[in-house]
Image 1 (cartoon, one colour):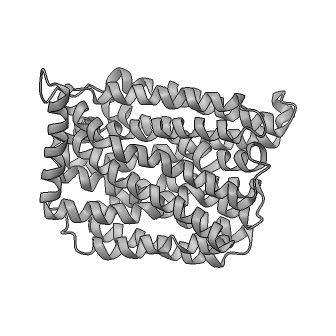
Image 2: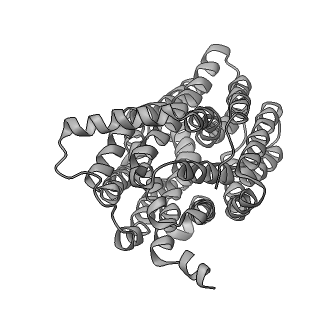
Length: 416
């Protein structure tokens, strides 16, 4: 009982609740409504292939920005003790940009993409510091469990608000909206408000990290960044894990970013695709917790490899998919493994790194992950442009799961 009480402390729950706060952006905006509104409202004058290309390019550009700045931001956060401060700053940037999407007029696809790019960059940047705070609030033996709890709350919170937004879009007259599109645009305001309000517990009850250095100037920050990169890549298992993660998480993120756009390109209705996304969220809620607990019992590496293998099969199934019902089945399969793969990757890495330099090391972790996220959506967009076949674009994602699986086989199991 005492152990459980310590695990469910106020800082622990406040940290996990940020996943509940920011996952609505990933669910409602990235995976759900933005691709739909972009294709049907903001970019109605573009061809299907052009819409996919520009959406993929915006996702890739935001990821590339994180690649360039993440290690430096991580070093700055650790040296100055600014992990929580920078998290909240970038959270506010994402919130403001997301709320601004509400006012973008039909046909203004460039404005919509710029705001989406800013919001996505804020979301990704805040996650650098959120991930690094995991080691601040959790004992080492609880890292896998807490990481899974965070993702589980994220799936449930994201699914809950998505369900509300779906109801708004399907019954707009119940809520005083003149059209379904007006209701969908209002959803961006709801996401911004939700993200802001549920970030407050972290702001209030998670302690800031102590400064690693005092009186550090900017050249010193660059030196710390260089030293961190040198130390990371000098360690064989961390280096190989990050390489494997770089590849397999590309496939995971690409499916998150592009699944709805792919379904629409096959002629499936937006309502069917959003319903499939809801299924993923509510399946993912318990699955992330169960996946993490199984990983504690049978081995993190074994469960991660199993999850990646399932993703490879999902990609092959997606290539052959012909009906919306199959999209529902795929949504269940994705929900079973998506949160677990993400949670165990984060907690396994947290076990490998020095806690006092967590922001620096997680800066590299996020840099690696977002480097991958540059490639996947851009590859899908290019394959569509070159072949004029959307099915080939989803098939191209398979290479990331196969290569990531092969590399992860060579990583030693965590010693603790």
